[in-house]
Amino acid sequence: MSMKFPFFRTKKVTDDSFKVEETNIPRHVAIIMDGNGRWAKKRGLPRIAGHKEGMNVVKEIVKAATYYKVEILTLYAFSTENWKRPKSEVEFLMKLPKEFLHTYLPELIEKNVRIDTIGEFDGLPIHTKEAIQNAKEQTKDNDGLLLNFALNYGSRFEIMRAIKQVYTDIEETELTIDQLDEEIFSEYLYTQGLSDPDLLIRTSGEQRLSNFLLWQLAYAEFWFTDVLWPDFSEEIFKKALHDYQQRKRRYGGI
Ligand code: V0D
Image 1 (cartoon, rainbow, N blue to C red):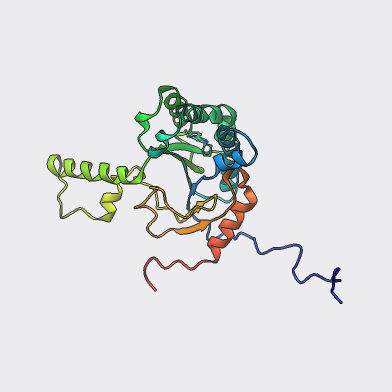
Image 2 (image 1 turned 120 degrees about the horizontal axis):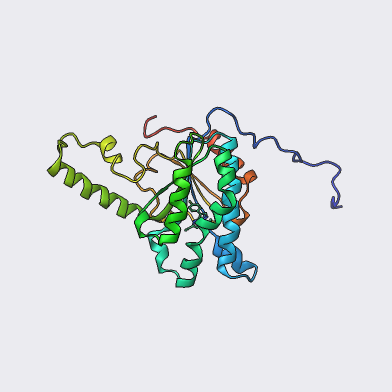
């Protein structure tokens, strides 16, 4: 006789195993916000509808990161490869920073968030640059969460650019090739002055780096989920932090 209605459950219904400790919060979290187009397609909507929904999720995760006292949140918003997308999609994406800031900047200022970017900022459209530049200036003295958007960003380009600048500085300044080490080289990357990410999150089931922070992610913990970015939430972010806290980091040692 089969047990169609078991009288007890083998698993607890309430689950306190997602608890996030206040100590051992990753200082720097980096996120590849993937799956916006797929989310829209699944609903019979245009890709841009997914990007817009994804924008609102950014705000939710900023709120959660602030709550957990994450110091730096680096979000991969637009890669150097993304220029290959249809012109209309690129144009829509380039309006999102202004829309995001129009909606959320007052609240971000109130929450003591500082906004900055990494990537080739000058290559962005003027209207996009102006909106972001204004936000950078208004938040430059804030010392809460650093909300760092990777825009027109590609990691190999970043490394090549650093190498060329190092070469120039060896020719034109006191810097010598013998002095050059990992610490000095790091200062030539867009992320100068920032600690390396402790945790990389990628949504949407893909498990690759896609030219994101190749140097900086050398010792990061990687956390992947099949959830598409527009479906990502504070609760799933919490699970990622919890899982991070269960890991033992070794940095190549024992
Ligand atoms: C689309 C999912 C916020 C990923 C999130 C220009 C793809 C929503 C910004 C933003 C994008 C950038 C700078 C800034 C304030 C907000 C953003 C882009 C795409 C690419 F200062 N969301 N967002 N930028 N998406």
